[in-house]
Image (cartoon, rainbow over all chains, first blue to last red; front, side, top):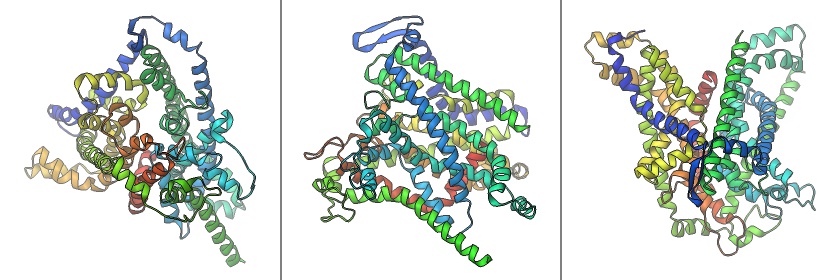
Length: 291
Length: 279
């Protein structure tokens, strides 16, 4: 558009390093994984032979995978629900005009900047029945409280979701805030002249105006949750049993621990397929909302 | 009446601020307190929020027996080189994507965008084998390449937006005055991009520090802080989690982060929001 056509080689030279690194770390491995998914590769037993769709069929008969998918779905849906509801609340708080604004924004960035594994390791101890922070806190109010959070399926799952929210909710709220700041004050003034109270103003002005933004940022957050790995690695190691083994954790267990590479690859390909479908829906949705 | 309303507003605002701070800061305070409590006293219930016998024992143990200094150094080397190199190559790419136009270039840009969709777990195993075969596994070079790869899409997209905002007439003027293409890029465009580069570098610093997947699967002897904290030894009287050491190492990671966030609050906010608007 701007530069002369004959200097386009210069452009290619400039993007070459980025393209080579990105291509080498994504394109080739993806094709290799797709290929592997049709093979029966069990390094521990020295097996490496073509297996057709066997791996894919096996997925549907595997109880562990069923548990993983079940928890991944619960994790994504519950976590995203609270991200959206609490995220909007937190964004409204961050948007308040008062002296502590900068302080509050700084505080809120700390969980975002902390490595997830650090949070996971700390959570492992924090949810301990006897010595953990959580129960100690609860015992300020209910002195005889006993609960071994990470040992029971439901409470372990709840704990993982809670820690995920602690870490990422502030980040989500900041992104909502970026949309909030575009709403001009005039609209609220006009509404209040017309007799709308704050609650009405929120539901009829704020919410409709940020909803598109909220939906748009929910897509990457949903995808990050689908491939979440470090939190459960550090916090529960997938336990109790396999009950908090998110699908990404399950895949790395197959490919790196059990060395059942063909099967793990089939799972990975299916996860990738789900990601592609979601982003395709996202594209359609955003286009529709744009009108 | 209006004055009273304002006072109530202010009180509510500070109560909310207090509650939010409590939820975020109290766990961090607890980690700090645990790190200076003698290992044995970590089993006291209720928790002593003011330790009776504060000690730096866990920190000395980390330095003397776990090689903390070495791990801090390898983290700094990997993250530092990644930030410098990724920023340079991403500025080049962002410039090209913004200033040149052809169908093939658009496809290349869309490829970089779409490659964000590919989960790490899909590429991990083949990459692992590739790294082993080429001798890049467990080397600084190998790790840095993967770290750079991880930050490329975000960096290119954000910087491309910023380059687009710089008027092209400046570069034309420089060209008329006889500046070469490279001179223009380095002396005209780069200085104008400084704030954007700072923002992107700050956010990438956090991303790299948080990167756990890459060092976990692609290195063994080289340990960065995020992997090291999961592999601390259990000392004699602890069970399940070496909480004495985990809390100390946790705090070593958390303290710089708190300072960092406090100093760069504005740039980080701008960076995240730029990403949000462009997303």
